[in-house]
Length: 314
Image 1 (cartoon, rainbow, N blue to C red):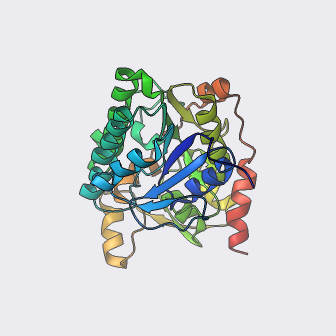
Image 2: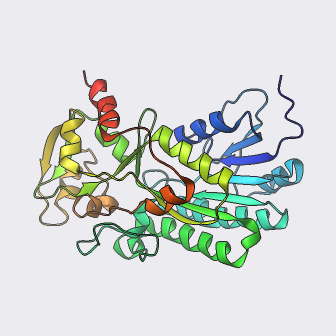
């Protein structure tokens, strides 16, 4: 039996998610883990304390007092397909600011924050590959991504203002794979998947397990900064659907509100309204800085990723 009493103590947020579960499995023998989630109680082995807690409530600070965290892996960002706009803002922006303030107050040595490539925005004038220095345009395109951009801006301010927090911000491409329940994961699982007529933007995908490995290596090597995470290859959206065994459901793309009108008529959300631009225009990211800094290379190819979704339909 491993004596964990002398190991560094880490807080991992967003413990209910498939990605957090993978990260926990990789770190549990190296650290004393405490996990929490604001959405629901998460069942964990006896040696890993688990809490359902609102970051904006007093109970959250009690965890810092009790466990004296050495590091935080903040995976608890509420996705754009979860909760209301106000609920996401309270959790992602106000809640994350409180987390960072508590990290300062209790002298946490390192913090890793999971963001998303959505913050760049999908735009017809985007370059072929967006680097970390590209402007974050998503908030100007849709109000439903304001919280994601605000979380980024907040994290970046703390990154430069409080270097003692050793903040690492990760902006991954589309995370997919077993157990992933985000927008792209849901679309790839469908038998008939919506496509906007006349559009097939280039997209990037990273497997859940590769993303978990990327988080672990970024935390353990501790090079503070902002990093895109994406493989070298990308694929048109409609080609990805074909490789996943999906049948395409064409949706007229004009007028602009046509997908929303069809969703109301059919009683089914065909494509998330706030992400429509990402199914029209590419927002591919350059992941070379992360790959070079952390000597990281994904194990799963696009072929491996798409084979999983095709197998689900056989």
